[in-house]
Length: 269
Image 1 (cartoon, rainbow, N blue to C red):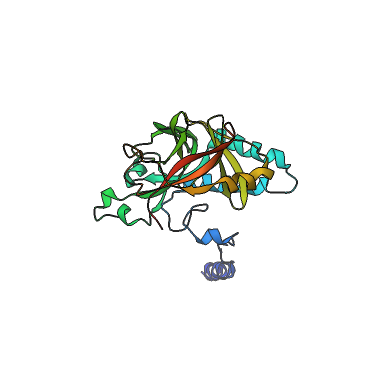
Image 2 (cartoon, rainbow, N blue to C red):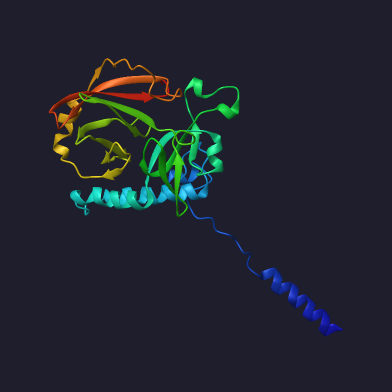
């Protein structure tokens, strides 16, 4: 009996002295770790873990190409390889029902007309990784899958009309994007990500390609752009969620003169 009590008390002593198991929570690496439940997602957005991982991978690419050891001429090539495989993040208008399909990142539009009392009619701003964008469809990459999304229903881009002398042509761009110049009936857009600028070539049929440019001509192209009066179209060429249209003169390398370009936005902010 005495031996049994002795073993019992020795066991209690051992358990009492056993160190506690403490789970160490890793320190956040950046302020973005506090912004959202899922790393990579934007603050105040509806965004899942898959989208967060895609945005994180994109940010890592941008950080890498900005390093001094990467040759300037190769930087657009790296971005183009990424676009061809994964797409690039672009912004568009959409609706809540998009979460039943390609599940873009969502956040509220600041436009009053986009926020009616009926929540089913609410227009949202979305972000997805897009490879190309035409009138009929957007080619989206999500979770190792390529998806074709109808542009008139769930992914609504900005229509941009170029008034060439022989007639108007419509291109489709992400929200707020503007053409830098035109060449061979293709539109060149200068995009920016965390201080890194890269040129996106957009064809009329919706094909995209990131290409290198002579950046020494950037000021020259920008200086050609001026606010101009928009031509009067016989019918509205943009969806009604675009409440504002405005026009600029944009340099056309083929004709060696400017042409009028009409762009659209949801409202004046």
